[in-house]
Image (tube, rainbow, N blue to C red; front, side, top):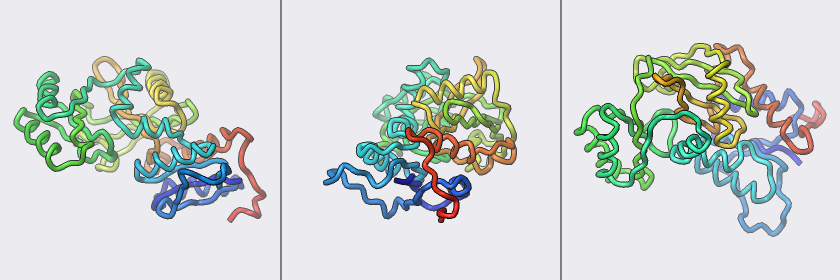
Amino acid sequence: MTLAFITSRLRVEEKLLLQELEARGAAFERVDDARLRLDLVPESGEAPWSAAWNRSLAFGRTLYATEALEARGVTCFNSAHVTRTCGDKVLTSLALAAASVPSLRTEVCFTPEAALEAAERFGYPCVLKPVVGSWGRLVARLDTRAAAEAVFEDRAVLGSWQHSVFYVQEYVEKKGRDARVFVVGGEAIAGIWRTSEHWITNTAQGGSVSRCEVGGEIAEVAEAAAAAVGGGILAVDLVETTNGLAALEVNHSGEFRNSIAPTGVDIPGAMVDHVLGSLSNGPILRPMEAVR
């Protein structure tokens, strides 16, 4: 029995993780999600792998593959519950609130009219985010009522059903930065500040990176946010507010290529250690000469 390492295209992150698995002599099989077929009504109860680590790029592929594998008794990293919660901003907000983790004021609405009322309550600027999405795409800062009316109407008419679920959030002046903290197995292991002149500080949008010390309030809030969604291998985004740190998002399959050098932390090594060490029967290992 082996570990399935499920990928879409191989980014730097996946290449580093595969190198770490090979270095430890782990028995794994790389699985291309484009060719993955999962029988939902299997004739046999035996699954092809004992564990799976899903690094697919698409949220839908990750979620449904993980759900199907867990139904066959496969241990998955991250779990379907964690993936579902982190991949949906509404579910993330609910999980953070239930665990009393500080986060931003947010309302979910289902019509442009109700979303406009939420924007008016928050005041301008405020922020509209897609409930499912990453890399800062389709995130809009609404500076005026006219802008809000236009964006809400466009999403309702031109978008999918998900874009008609309006996730409206208060706007916070970031002082040009926010933090991303990597939490593995419940422990904050590394963090970066993402800095940009643009109000969106994602590195995918051109934000620069510097080391963030993970201690004190930063570690406390990041670890609490990770625990709130179910734990595992997570990247927690934090923002500084006048009342202290607040959790923005929790990412179930975060990128880390730009975080290794500034932090000096072996992030992929820590992730692989967690996966191999978490398996119920211990690490899945084979002799080094058998590693492909």
